Amino acid sequence: IQLTQSPSLLSASVGDRVTLSCKGSQNINNYLAWYQQKLGEAPKLLIYNTNSLQTGIPSRFSGSGSGTDYTLTISSLQPEDVATYFCYQYNNGFTFGSGTKLEIK
Amino acid sequence: EVQLVESGGGLVKPGSSLKLSCVASGFTFSSYGMHWIRQAPKKGLEWIALIYYDSSNKYYADSVKGRFTISRDNSKNTLYLEMNSLRSEDTAMYYCAKSTPFAYWGQGTLVTVSS
Image (cartoon, rainbow over all chains, first blue to last red; front, top):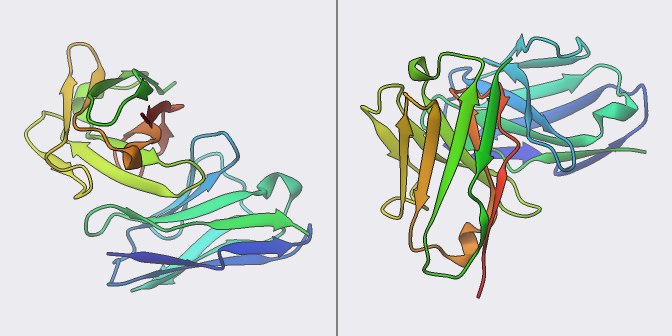
């Protein structure tokens, strides 16, 4: 299964609602996770099984989707959210998306 | 607290071999599948290998199949990745991670393949 993330680069203002997209080449059956990676750090799990918030992750992060189309939403963008975000499917093998780099405008 | 600490990376020439280690603590290592994931410089993440908790099954990405071998020693809480016939395209940060969907990652160990 291949994953296509869009956009590759997103610039938004603090307080904005931000939506990142991840599309699979096949049905992912909700086995979809999202990671945040800041410069020089290992990825951090934000969301698993499409919409389950990992312990310790702020509630402004949420996930949704089904079938082949999935979304990560940040309800109110904060300066510390500057990072690259990767989606990941574990329904059929293990595949990461190419990432969305999120910047503050 | 779960901790994963990788080691063994370095600068090597094309065609050479290297063995990475990942020491785990803070959880029952022998009960969980473990993975290796890599990230080339300024690139995305690539899953490369999985080993079941009891070493009964091992899976590899096509890009490393036949060249890399994943193994583990549950008595030492240690995961390994033996890398042979290294190529320039294997240059990356290599992470170990605890069972999908990877709530825990190590800090990574850098492998550079260059002449």
